[in-house]
Length: 234
Image (cartoon, rainbow, N blue to C red; front, side):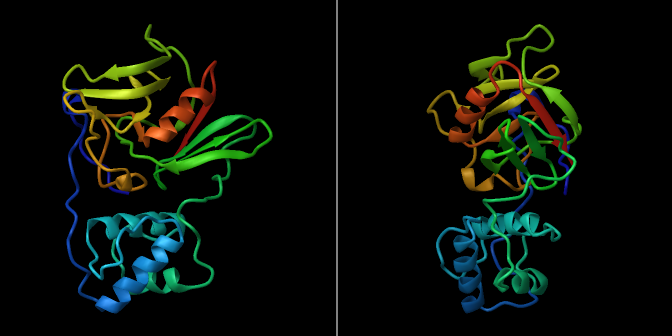
């Protein structure tokens, strides 16, 4: 997993790893790209339109598939990925097993390798899961607890980066400014700084917090109230 360099808080970490716009040279025809896009969508990987072009959205979907199926996260529909994708044993992108060694009981589990988060209730049932964006340069693996940190509030409905962005449904769990929140939105128009389909990839990096979808940020806001264990794994 590539780790992007540190970014200033005011910029809210919007550095991009460049995405190509065409299929890799090694293999694949337009009809094969269409077949791959159809299969990615069927497996909940969110590849977007079936147009035969392995563009940015298809590459992001491929990364999610590769991470869910323990493949190198290249974003490329190479021969290994294509074969695994078309196999009957291919694992879905949107429903994943909780990593081993994450403990037991009520908790939130984050996999930095998979760019994924699970909310797990006291019976061990996964009540919600989905893609994330973080930055392991800032957030280290370990066990944390949601709540106030460094004299700062545990939850902030509309947090700010101090500049032009809001970090909505901010839930703090690690010192001092690290928490979960919706993909940052511009104060000027309420639009997110990037699309949901980049979640579950490392094509963006946060300043240190964990970005999630708007609906996931609301779910975490409720789930983590009152102090909840957060297990961050590589």
